[in-house]
Image 1 (cartoon, protein in one colour):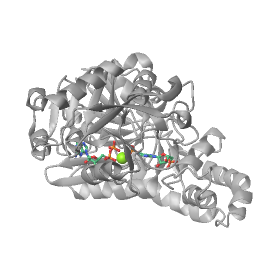
Image 2 (cartoon, rainbow, N blue to C red; image 1 turned 180 degrees about the vertical axis):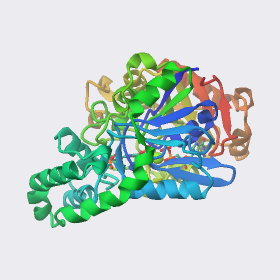
Image 3 (spheres, rainbow, N blue to C red; image 1 turned 60 degrees about the horizontal axis):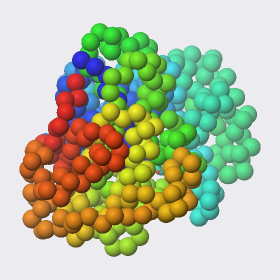
Image 4 (cartoon, rainbow, N blue to C red; image 1 turned 30 degrees about the horizontal axis):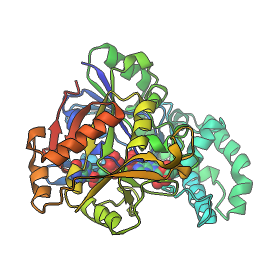
Length: 428
Ligand code: GDP
Ligand code: IMO
Ligand code: MG
């Protein structure tokens, strides 16, 4: 029994939902620690596709406790609808959900502000390409100590004071951007309408996770976004507004580093990015289009087409080090089998180094690999259930990733379904 953190090791959408769902089979608790409904995590259960935005991806198992930690930002409109949908689908029927009293809330004015700022920045260097879900403004309020937390919903006096503080701070910008000012009375009644529904779900989740880890339960901690979108260690300022790396699990849940036994990173067999910012191996040619087509690379949250490119090994090594990875899960290996040839980035021109140089300065140096574009291969790879059933070039590819990053491969995914998983090492 142990505590395992699973994080994205690229720019998000690595397949966290699929891998967490697969690993959650043997977990008693699955907890999220950062981000909000900017995340879109896809699980395929039988022939059903489920996309979670706020609820941890352990929700498909009966009796697995799903926890939303203090480091998250929660839009209650979205959360309520997501929970209702999952319950309609037969999930979360037995009190399997807990929400931190200390998590921050996203209000409609955060969403509007996010969108209006993006509109104003459109086409310029200040455009981040956010998901427009209000994530940045909510974390900004938290850092400015005027954030509104879950617990404030149950204290109308404090809630009103916080709303007034936000109106005073944001009023001029809202007016300048032509965004409706904060309607305090409307927000107060919205909050009152959530309170009764939310109260039974709320608790001190830090204590809950602590007790689970101390009590010998298997605890799975689910990251959102990816290492290169981390506020401190990603491609700043083209990042999200939270700490996505494994260290964020400690602050976001309120557990110490000593509670964590292992950290697995997830990487696609290639790279994708959605939104603005540097992406050294981005392919703007038809190979990029081919990857997008066969990998179905369209955002699970916004539906935007994802930019696609070759695997960037130095960036992955950077992510492995910043997260302290003890295992690596490689997803979407099947997609590369559709390509006539495969390349991989093994370094950057002029010895550019992530962490020393800005990613925008890094020009990739590629190594061409033995292609595995045989038309029969995608099927063969999707049906593999053991490493030995993979074609030799695909196995060599996995070995190369492990050698370059210095991290052992613990799981390989060869399709979106649960069954299309090659487990190499037990999670718990
Ligand atoms: P997340 O945000 O990291 O959970 O990833 P997303 O759900 O946003 O995007 C990953 C997409 O790839 C989803 O549509 C998954 O169903 C799909 N997927 C996951 N693993 C595999 C795989 O090994 N092969 C293929 N073809 N698709 C996969
Ligand atoms: P999952 O958990 C991919 C990106 C946005 C934008 C930047 C900032 O599904 O992997 P934000 O709305 O967070 O202020 O946007 O971060 N982004 C993601 N990209 N997957 C995600 O989540 C993302 N969450 C945010 O596209 O570039
Ligand atoms: Mg996603």
